[in-house]
Each structure stands twice: as C-alpha cells, then as structure tokens.
Image (cartoon, rainbow, N blue to C red; front, side, top):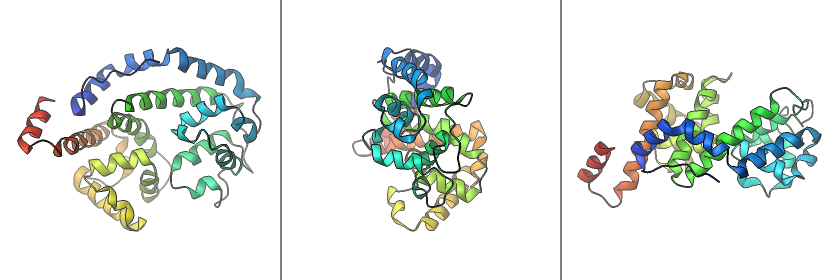
Length: 262
C-alpha cells in the first residue's frame, strides 16, 4: 500500500501535503489493496438487501465503515446492524441518540430503516461510497505519519458540507461538537482545553461560539463555506498543534524560529 509522503511536521508539512495532494491521492488509490477492496464493493453491494446481509460480509463492511471514518467498529457487527436497521426517522433510533453524526450519515446513506427506502440501487450510490472510502483511507494513511494531517484533511473535506447543511447554526455547532475529528480541530484552532468537554453541553456551545466570534470574526458555521476562512481555520489548528508539540522541550525563542522557518 502506498504511504503518503509528509517529509516534515507542522505548517510546512501541511503546505507540502496540499501542494502534492492530487498526485499523492491518485497514486494512493491505485494501490493494489485499496483497488481490490473498492472493486469488491462495486461488484457485490448490489446483492445486499438487508442490514444483516451487509454486516455478514466483512469486506463490504470494511468499505462501508471506512467511508464514514468508522473503521474501528469493524468487529461490532451487532451494534452496526442495529444502527442500520433502526434508521434515522425515529427520534429514539440508535443513530439519533449518538452525538457522533457519522453514524446517522451512514444509516441515512443506506436506507435500511423503517419508513425509508433502500438506496443501494440508486444511481451514484456506489460511486459516492467509494469516493468517501478512498478519501478517508488516504486521511487514515496520512494520520499514521502525523495525526494532525489526518484531522486537517478530514476537516477540509467536511466543514464546507456542514456549512451548507440545512439546519440551524446551533444544530451545526452541536453536530461539529459531536464529531471527534472536527471537534479536535476546532478546540485547538480556538485554543480551548479538551477539558471543556466536561461542562454542560449548552455551556460548551456558548464557549465555542464566543471564541469563534473572537478568533474568526463570526460564530456562523455557514460562513465556513468560504475557502479562505477554512484555510485560516486549518492553519491555526496546525500551528497551535505544532506549538503544543514543541512546548514541552523547546524555549519560546526556539519555537518562534522553527515556525518562521516553516
């Protein structure tokens, strides 16, 4: 399997990855292992009619979960089957009771739940799942070298979709706060401690919005449809993450010099 090349950490590494992303992504997707997985999915997903069918095929499950960044749940067959079978139309459906929005996205994408229709046979379904799987697989591979690169790539892909979602601003913030990679990025970019997660969720919302207004000049997630604002968000995340990594063993002067060289 081709491994993404990230020759340095921090902002310099992120900028290198951005410059070379298209070439590296194309090369990564030609890897024998990845192509074998996506070919199998394309050839076999059409025979699936129930959630039980899907979770019984580990190779189909691997692509399905990988597409939504849930690959760590590959051995949780019963849990995933329930997530898919209950769908999303009922307020008490399992997917709606999880703060992590990726489970709901996965359940909606397939349509196994009551009152829903199976989407597997729809035009574009397979291409959409495969595209997500390829993107997430590249992010995971990049994260094996530098986890901050995985989070930055994920946010770059997802934040604009959240910005354009048809929901209130508060709902978008709650969605963001429940998405582990996105939350990690915003916490660091806004210079918030991870311990903020221990306070009441409505108080968390107020803190996130107040800090976003101060740092970015807006607390409206819809404004992150602007690529320049997304670039500013990710730059702040990468730089603050780099500073945190340096802080334990370097002086302030050394940190500043390293950042300037980047």
